[in-house]
Image (tube, rainbow, N blue to C red; front, side):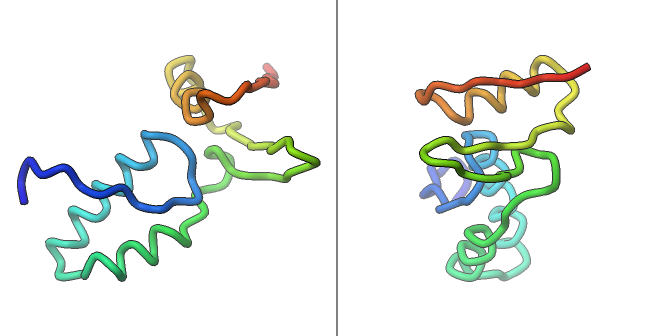
Length: 94
């Protein structure tokens, strides 16, 4: 239904931007006749792409992510916002 607010998907990927990507994927899949349950299953299992907020490890309660493909300040801000309101520490290289 155009303009309808969609129910969010359960994703492995953090962030509102990934939820928006999932909603866009669902919109396309729906047009191809895919039912929501099948789309939800596929989206739930999708772990993302290498170096794009890629979960690396968890040690104690600290989770480590690799976002080395991010090359702009704007992209870094979006990535950091994916973890709000948690405290985040960013390590960067040049």
